[in-house]
Image 1 (cartoon, helix red, strand yellow):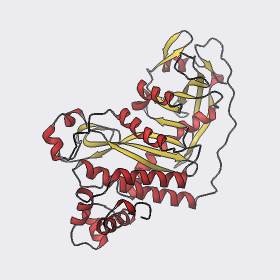
Image 2 (cartoon, rainbow, N blue to C red):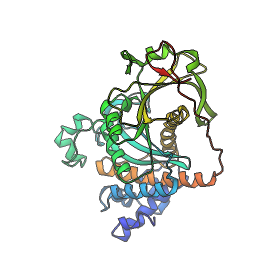
Image 3 (cartoon, rainbow, N blue to C red):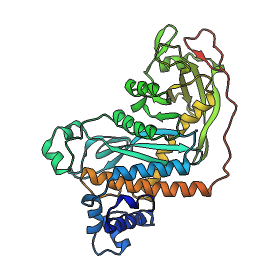
Image 4 (cartoon, helix red, strand yellow):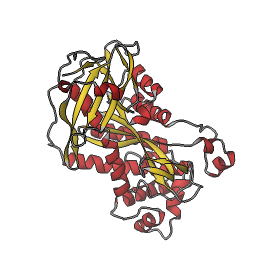
Length: 380
């Protein structure tokens, strides 16, 4: 509260924000307006609703305070920025941005809102840093619906990758220590997303679909076709980080891609492939960009870091009520989500400090050597 107290000009909303955060951090099963009000000793949820819907405070300024807090607590040059989205299932049609759309959280088409998030993971912990509510075109083009949900005229349609870049720009411009970005196929297959990172000289390890076209010495080829042609020597068994059940171990192959003029001097593009040990037909593909000499182990580490944002989503929903809100307005969504991210950051950094002394997962990087009769240079 010492960090964000100056963002509230009056004592009443400042006190209510403190009560809101304490409620989010409490062991309540549900963290909606009623339960948070009861925990704070309020007779009704009116004060909690006023904090989200009517009180004067800037959620984006609090978000910036959160980013600075996270940088101080878990910032590290080895930090990785992660872009991903999560769904919030809703029953009605009034909540800003809600419609029937695919939710990766549910694994199917649902009536839901979609939030695009930016997470930060370092050896010291992992936190959610930023958020953007995805507004489908149908919402952006419906003036009556926009007014009812409190969506300002300045809000325009933006794709999920564009929202991701908006958040990345804020984090990088603020000087957050990070040399890598990772994300799933929704972001990896977007050429503008990759090009923006290259222009900022930020390394990336981004998932792409199996049919992704990859440059080779003899034109372009599908990622899955290149994987099928990789020699046995190209595969190495490595852990990409610890999961709930221990190290996440897969077989990996890395190939250096030819320079097609898009890589900046001193940087190289690579193809990274992950193969399941239990089910060798299950493969995942990543386009990578980073400084010359980057070891395979570093690319594998960054690829494995993507799971950190899934863990942040799970913890935020289970522990601090990320999806427990009962608001419809556009600005109220941002206010609730921002306070939740702050509560989650407090939990995450506190837990990380208590777990100091975890093993350092350094490994020797493999060398790059050309494979015979291949369109790309596989590392062995």
